[in-house]
Length: 248
Image (cartoon, rainbow, N blue to C red):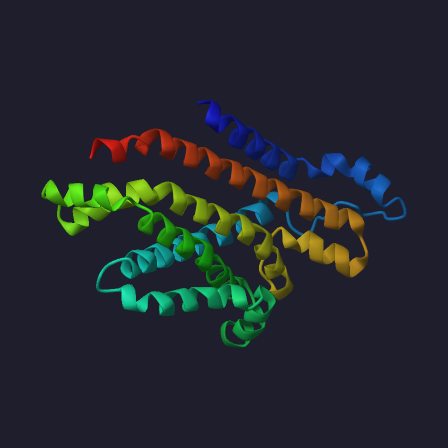
């Protein structure tokens, strides 16, 4: 139960601060004493938080499925020749800055959430793919041979041995990808997506430091809460599967 305490506290703080931001008006008035409006109010912070999380969650799900599938394929005998190609395709997302991806995607997809989703998916592929390859290739070959010797089919070996043993490394890759994309998603506000980047962009445009701080604090808390949640998942995975290799 203790491993969930930190994610729960950070999530509670994030939600509470998002809902109660207007209460902190005196504090932000001290930051910007010459302004009448110091609390961003074009959209509620809870609404922006929800949209921000949804964009990151969708892009993470798509990137995870694509990268893990690519990693599995590249570590099979029939797919090893495609490993350089798969790695190069995944690297494209981080070779091009997200802003450049948005500039290319907007003329095709228009303004809104679609271009930033494309950018987040491309940007999130590489960490997950690298960790999937590292996790699968790092499994002791003697363990795999023992599993095959027990009569397991290739699919059973993958699902009951390889993925459980490589899972912690794969989750670590997803953790890195999601944490990076929480910050990256904020630039979606420049093309009409509703994210926690809205107050940051509005603050930069209007020279309002209070707006910038409000968006930055919530983005930082979201990243911390998410990172803490993945850390708890990694510990849970260790507890569940740490002894599996020695029992095969």
